Image 1: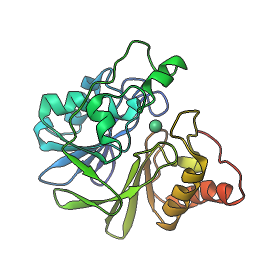
Image 2: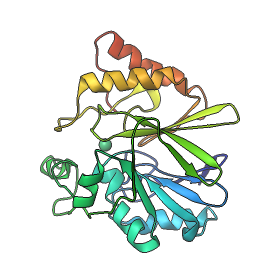
Image 3: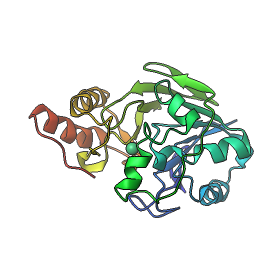
Length: 245
Ligand SMILES: [Zn+2]
């Protein structure tokens, strides 16, 4: 589904638009012309539904060469192995998260914890996925004729990156699970969720002055994203914690 010029929503689960399998995060396709990229991979329970949306949007799977993961939580990354194996997509992730993805680490990805808490189906095993390239703050990722800038953004989880895309005077932020419409956040009782790091990340994202926000769950914003990010940042500035999604 086309949601903006060169941006398509091809997956979204129960905390979003119910477009694909319920555990899926929002999965975006970026059209770089000659080649395309996916931002996040969904939960891996029914990746064929994401595939169907890619094709229904008019893209052959072979054109999607790159998969960028914002972080290693299963709802974003457990689908990566399927796309890597089936289509040879080049998987890009934060340097810190790469070993957890490659090892299918049930603890570092908090999947075991999520299953204990009943927020992920029991018995599901994280499918290990080779990472072709690791990135960190300031790195650039070229997708055809467009460029994404990597922003290290811990707080919700370690090994989390956001991606900034600037074109035609528009700043678009692919925010993963850092900040959502309405200035909401996702703070969870998991090993690597840290409020101090979350606040620092929000200050950094606020300073970007983003126009558009494409978050990992819930609605996306096509203008005035900075006003929403400001709400979360302002909460942290008052030493409060922003509301959870
Ligand atoms: Zn997450």
